Image (cartoon, rainbow, N blue to C red; front, side, top):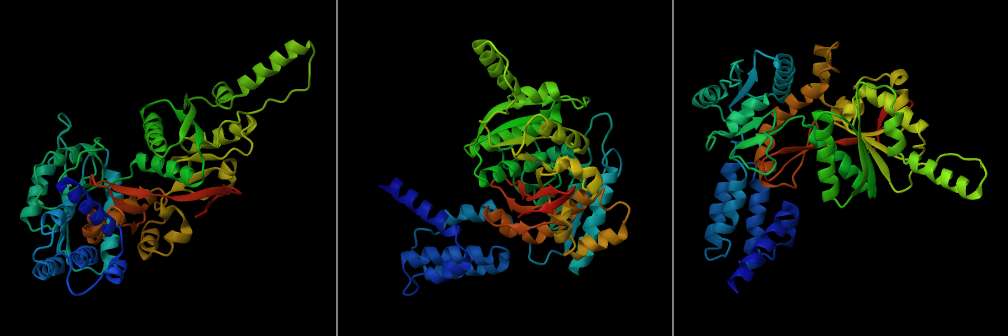
Length: 447
């Protein structure tokens, strides 16, 4: 059956692509050339040389001569090659598109500072060209298309930016981008793939998904969600819910709080199930006809609580949760709960809170990177305020040399400043964050 045979070959191919070049070389049946050894040799070439297009092309031509009638020639691997992008090994011209007017100017300045620092540290001889993105305040449309075309015409081999979501949306409508783009924001569509457009940014969805992955890793199965009202909080809660349920987790209860409040008892009592505990006590008291010693007991049907909060609210909510009998219940939160500033006195209220954060927030990791040290020396007053934007800029620059590999292999990873990075089939640069726990008011790396 031809269909079954094609499916088996596709399954074999996908399995081989999960292996390292070393493993492929080791397990290759070898000579004389056979159908089996052809599969291994082809997978080895793609995995070993995917970051060097010129060498890969020569290797594939040699492979085709060695295995002239192989069933993989050429359709089955054509898709693998086309799925990624080709950036020349020695990029000699990088264009950066950043806003020079409007609300993103300060963020753009921090990203630019980081890109320049990463460029100098790399000792690259490439030209770094900056192009100003300006938006029409009436229409919201920017000059991103004309600036992209100008960069390409000037010889850019890869483009970093733009930063504004609206400009990324404009580029997403550009048919067949001739030069790869590492955008510093995302469009809303999760599922659509855009040719040569790689969407990278500090999306809160990454934080939410990292918490869900952490909870799964810890063996948790059931949770409750506490998030603020409004678009920001609900967006994170929705993203967490989607990921958590896809991992097989259950959500027992979900509720919202008003960020303008300081006393959250009306929200926390039902969240922790203390109202049901009170009802059980009243029912028992009524049945027995007498009072008894009573201590409210929190719900026992959950493994952890997922908290969405900004720093001030997190410092208020964690102690109030303790007061409302959270006890030893693990509380997991996104990075938004932490200001990023080392202040044990202020952060003592966050003790035992577990969060996922980008690597550069942990000084033990960041201080090993000379670019971090350079930025710290350059802007001693601002570097913690800008730490996440610095990490974004540094990683965007470093992605240029890694994109060939990451875009072809969704399992491949890059240890970045903003996370452990991988590229999804849709071209999203996904940030996997690191776990930390507050102890004595300080965030400590736990993995």
